[in-house]
Image (cartoon, rainbow, N blue to C red):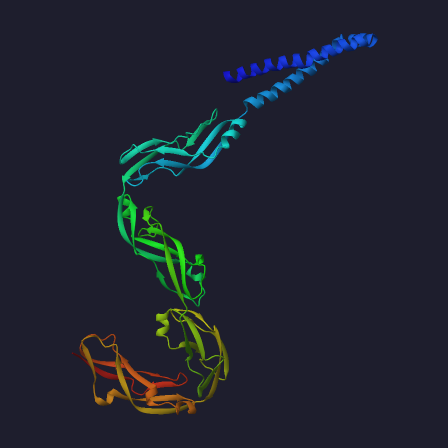
Amino acid sequence: MKKLLRTIRIVCRKLARFIDKKIVVPITKLVVYTTSKFDRSGKKFENWLSKTNTLLYVSLFLAILIFIVIDQKIILFTDNSAEVLKDRPVNVIYNEEAYVIEGLPETVDITLIGSKTDLYIAKQSSSHNVTVDLSGLKPGTHKVNLEYTQNAGKIEHMVNPSVATVVIYQKVSETRTLSVDILNQDSLDSKYSIDQVLYDTDKIVIKGAEHQLKKVVSVKALVDINNLVSTEVGTTTLKDVPLKAYDAEGNVVDVEIVPEKIDVDIVISSPSKEVPLKIIPVGEVSFGQAISAFNTSVTRVTVYGDATALESLNSIPIEIDVTDLKSNKEYKVDIPKPVGVRSLSVNNVTINVILDTVDSRDIDNITVDPRNVADGLSPQAGNSQAANITVNLKGVTSVIEAIRSTDITAYVDLEEYTEPGEYEVEVHVEGTDPKVKYTSKTKKIKITLTRN
């Protein structure tokens, strides 16, 4: 406050001298000169000037003028402001090869206080960082001050936070196995697949405080498909793939990874296979009717997907509900994608179901095969005749007449029988033509299980 009053007094003195020298003296000289040139006018002016009201008005005008000038000068010289510099980095000096620092904030807020002119000058500086020197400290817990060391002249400053409790740990290192995480794989064309991800080494080094290293359960290279220059079939090199360390819950662990980035070769392939559509009717058509034919808009489709999945895929089953169907009908069906298949050359199919009069036929001597036999057990039918059954076929005459015994499979499922003994087991029948209904005339047979 004293400093402010002193500044006001100095300004007032300088202003009074300025007014006396630059305004009062020149005006007086002008009045005297004018009076000397015009005696009559001078006497009138002198009479006007000597009036009490005139002096009062002149004095009031000058007082207002002086007040405005002084007020503006005081604002100019004494109006302080504050400027907050947010998120300024904290530079820490320590032996990075030997120690790990925890508890020190990465950024602070710096508040600068001063006149607008000084603030403007101070803000022009390219550096407003806070530096903390920990080079003389040993492992342990320490309380340190965060100070703004830049020479800011008359500017006052405050740092938030101004104090931090830091913990210094000895740095240790471990070797870990590197794995790969593929990001945004859905953005890859569904006809393509990542066949291989190749990199120079699967061993990397992680460094940090011992308690941090214990948290790390995996270190992964993050391969982002969106960063690939080419997504066509072939090999593409992705440079500077970042590595991240994760804990058991999938959170990133803050440790040093050497190297931080690697180059990765991405091998893209497009496995495909052409397979037929297999129409499977669900339910039974109206009494006295049978399915004569399935006419489809497409009979085969090309599938794209994992090579392993395609290897075992021989057809794509499509179920249609024919329960109580009385006449021919057209179905429009989406083709389902089997497991491991990402794309199809055709996504839907039109199926025309043609009905005709039902007929019946028996086929004898169909062998019953055991399935899912437990290890260490051998099955045997109760008698020789039980091993062969008769299967009844129902369908359109032209269809069932074309069926041979080799087109029919009969079996018993022994999965739930794990101990030796004699069991009565249900017989199941399958056929190659889904338009035909297959029924075993022998519902159950006796099977004896013995130890090998």
